[in-house]
Image 1 (cartoon, rainbow, N blue to C red):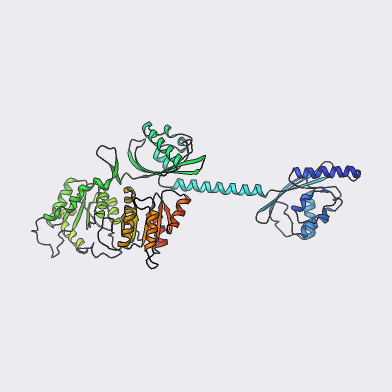
Image 2 (tube, one colour):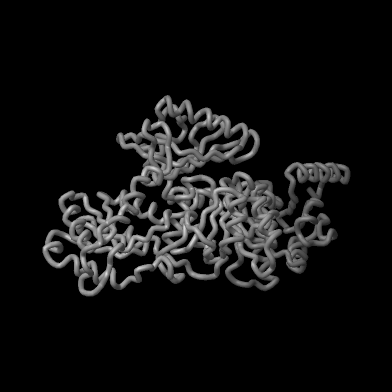
Length: 558
């Protein structure tokens, strides 16, 4: 190249500058004497080297020395050198890499800049080094990796959720399904993904769900509906389906989270409507209160009067139930009976809602494990019995157990006692938690969790009642659903904040059905301290109570 005329050299230089522009990088050409033949101007923005060192004829040694002195040392293998090199050793090492037949290295400059070095030895005896700034590419690559990691974490979280979750795209095709949903449908994940609901659900069910999904996709209004489903194995379950629209216009997705509420609800007589099972158990009310006119003729045994104390018998054996009830009747106890675990749980729930204290559960020893667990959740003593126990002095054992409890435990119970106040409790007794929730199924869910935690609580079915109960019951914390009748949760929170003083300010936690930013902002604007999302879980409430009540949860929730 040194033999070229001045005009040819200028043309060649111009062409190389064009090539440098075309490859969006700096271009360095050097000969076998380690002299620079061409150095493009783009190198000035990539390496800390003065312009004078780009002149043709400059020694590579001087050029690299200027790079070193400017703090631009780059690694030869894309990573930090394993040992610190002196200036001369570093220059010699770099010249050696420039003459490799082929070398590609990557250097990170600072926290957000990457340079790529491509070095080639040409058959003509010249060497070429192309330096490109690939920061944008690396940032996109790192963002892609971060996105993939988030996706993997999200998938892992979804797969470990105990309730089914599915996601459909705008064509209502399943694009995501967690393991719980696959188990619920009794299908492998691969048999669900890429299919529509019509491939999985019965026609009549899919026709109704299709209309709901289309309305949700068009309006964005979250849907919560109970649904009776016949599973592939023939069993029937009732689920609470929470449906949300997420994404952006043109890329909306329908998310469905299902919760099995079979044990909490029932259907009406013709099977057409799902109702809280509490309604079905109204027949228990008379059982709990029917003992007012019992004759009082048997004197107390062992000098201890346990008459009128309420005892519940649990046994599927009708003869055993009759024998136990006869013994309890001799003690003038107020008794009732249920035949299985499900009825026990629902009976105790109704009793709690009605403010009725059950003093003792006598249970068939064959049902001891599940029944004792349910009784303990309510803080009630459980006494397992069998036929041998009844032949011995069962009455004496019951008297000893009841004698250890105050006859009117519900009236003078301390904060640590098992009894909690429900929405049905009368009077102006202070409570721990006020729940503002109009949905009856969600009221039952809140009740079960709060009773398991041992908190005294009240439930308001609308915004006006929430404000009234806040005034009357002085709760320590409010769980406020935002979609309430009469006054919305936002309005009720703002009303409470306008009425309270600094001394009686309490935490208000918004309960949202969907994670939209506008809803969160409106919660905070109304004076709420935080928000949680439905469906409600014991873990979510426990975290709230530990944060805002600053005490460990009084957990008896198994």
